[in-house]
Each structure stands twice: as structure tokens, then as C-alpha cells.
Length: 163
Image (cartoon, rainbow, N blue to C red):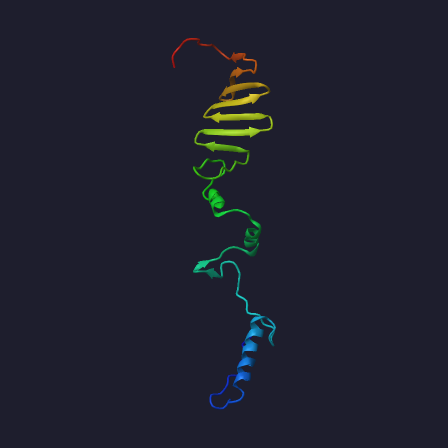
């Protein structure tokens, strides 16, 4: 809706210019506040991507912006997530577990589960089974250490040798 304001006429509105200006200003104020004749309130188009702040387009939805309203994180805390990758250790970034609760760094994968904890290094796996610590190679148990100190090895044992 267009705003129409009567302006004082120079030289012809000697005793009415103050009232004319006040009426015009009241019309502008009423229109901007949404209480004018046409009940039109001036509002920007805030559809995501259609407005900008200092030349940068705002692409967030209202719902996304509202999430920030109740967030209690700092910029430094948010930066910990920037470039963080699920199931990967990234220096100076937050660790995000993989879908199975694992964390991988290169060839080493650590996995926690309800039945125990295991670590995988290449084809090797070290895991807890009951009260025993077991070692597997290519999914075959090859060594076991119990909490009482008993050692069980599959195959031959070399007592004195070199690596």
C-alpha cells in the first residue's frame, strides 16, 4: 500500500504547516506500526536466501535460527565441530563416534560394546571375553591372558628368540 502525505505549500500554508506535517508524520508512523488506514505493516521478505546482512546471504530457515536462540555454546565450542568427521580422529577437533560407537585413526579402530571392549589394529583384534584378555589374528583366537595370570597360546611357543 502506498503512503500518501499532504505536504505544506510554501507561502500558502502559513498557519497550517505544523498541523499538516504532524498529520503526515502520524500517517507514516501508523503505517510502519501496522495501525495505519490500510493496516499495512512494512516487513522485509525473510524467506531464507532472499535477504542478507552486510552482503552475506542468510540461508537459514526460521526453525534453524530459533535453535540458536536456546543454544548455550560458544564460538570456540562450535569450532571444535567444524571439519570434524564421524569415526575419525581429527587433530584439535571434537571426536564424533561412528554409527557402531567406534573411533578410527588410520589403521587403529577402537570399539566399545555392552559385552566388552575391543581394539583392532590391522588384522589383529584385542578384546575382553569374560575376565580374559584375548588376541585374535584374522578372526582366530591365538593368545589369552586371564586375570589370574594364566597364559594360553595356540600353536608353538618360542621362549628365547629374536624378532
